[in-house]
Length: 235
Image 1 (spheres, rainbow, N blue to C red):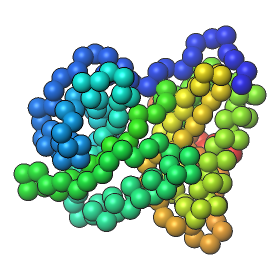
Image 2 (image 1 turned 90 degrees about the vertical axis):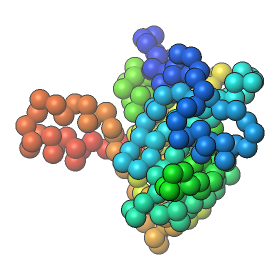
Image 3 (image 1 turned 180 degrees about the horizontal axis):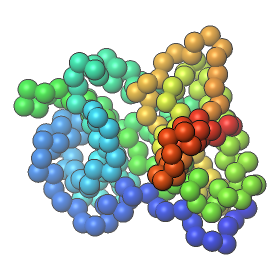
Image 4 (image 1 turned 90 degrees about the horizontal axis):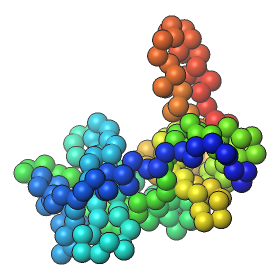
C-alpha cells in the first residue's frame, strides 16, 4: 500500500471512549451483559452508534487489561424486529467469521428485563474505524490505495456470494478497516440484520458511500438527489 505523507484517518471512536475512564454499568444493560457473560465483571463505555432498535456499547474486562475490549450490540425486540430475525443475524455473522470476512461473535443471548425482551450479542472490537472514515482520509485519495481497497471489498462480497449469503445493506459504515503491522489495509464486514440467502445468482457490487451524506447540506433538493444516486462505490 502506498503511504500518504499526510494525516492518518481518525482512530475508532470506540477505542477512545474506553480511554476516558471506565465506569461500572449502572443501567438496565448490567443485567443483560451479565446474562451473556456469566461471572465476568464488565465495564462499559459510551454508546458509540445506534439505530431505531439497537445500540452499540463498548465493554471490557477490568480485571485484565491485556484482553481486547469487545462490543455489545443490544436490540430491543418488538413487532418489527423479532427474536428470530436477530438470531438469524448472529448465525450469518458467525458464518461470515468462519469465512474470515467478519469479526468474531463472542456470545449471544435473548434476555428479558422489566418485561421487555432484548437480544444481546458480543463481538470482537475490530480495527481502526469504518470504511466511511477511510474514504474521508488521505489514504483513500491515493489511486493505488483506492484500487487495493476496492479489490478487497469485492473479494469480501465474492466470498459471501460464493457461500450463498446476500448482505443486503451495503454501505460504508458496515465495513471496518485496520492497518496491520506491515502497513497493509485489512477489511471486514458487519451488521447482517438484513442478510438473507442469495436469490439465484444476483450479485451487486455497489456500496453506498456515507461520506456523501455530509456533503448534501447547502445544495438544492435536485442536486442532493443526484448526489445520492451517484454516491456509490463500484467495486
